[in-house]
Picture (spheres, one colour):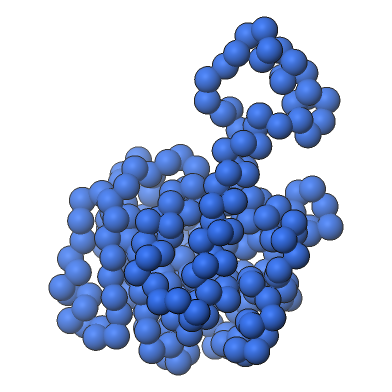
Amino acid sequence: MIAIITSTLIPSDAYSFYSPEERLSQTLNTIEKLLATGFVEIFIFDNSMHGINKEALVKAYKSIKIFNSPQYSFTNKGLSEALLLLNNIHHLPNDVHLFKISGRYYPNEDFKLIDDKLLSDYGFIGTGVDFDKKTRAFNTRAYFVKNKAILETTLILAIEEMLSYSRGIHGLKSFIKSAVSLFKPSIGNEYQLSLEQAFARVLKHNKNYLLLKKINVNGCVAGSDFQEFTID
C-alpha cells in the first residue's frame, strides 16, 4: 500500500493560516507517523506555486517521492486538491492500494491499515456523515482507495458534481434561479459543492464504499490557534 500526502508546503498568504515553516513541520510529522505505522512507500503531491526544497526532504527520508505541480489555488480548496491529485495520478503504479492523507493530519496510535481483501471488495473506505440525507459528506482528509483507476474516475466525477451543482434544481429557490436565468443569463457558479459533498454523492451513486466509525487520524484546525482533533 502506498501513502499519498497532499500538501501545499509553501502556501500563498492569501489562502493559508499557516506559514511555510509550519506547513513543512506538519508534513514532516505526517511522514514520521506514516513510517511508524508501517508504510514503506510515501508519495507527496505538492501544489506550491513557488517551488519547494525537494532535496532536503528526500535526503531526510529516502523512501519518499515528491512531485511538485504549481497550480492556481482556488477559494474552493477541495477543487484545488482534486486537481492536484489528478495532475499527479500518472505517477502512481497500477493495481496498488492507496491511503490518501492531507499534510496537516497524521495517523494516531490507534490507526490500523485496512486488510487487502477488504480493499479488494470496496473502492473507497473511510468516514462520512449523514449518508442517508442530502447533506451527506465523505471525509476527504484521509481515506483508503482500491487503486488509482477508481480514484481517477471518482475525482473526475466529483469535480463535475462540484461545478454543475449550482446549475441544477434542488428545491424551490434553485428552481426560481434557474427560471430567471432563462431571461437573464449569468456567468460562473455562485455556489459549488465541497469536495466532501461531491465525493459522497459519487460514492453513494456508485455504491462502492465502506464507512468506518473511526479512521483514527488526528489533525489541526486551520484558521485558529493550534487545536488537535480526531477525525470521526
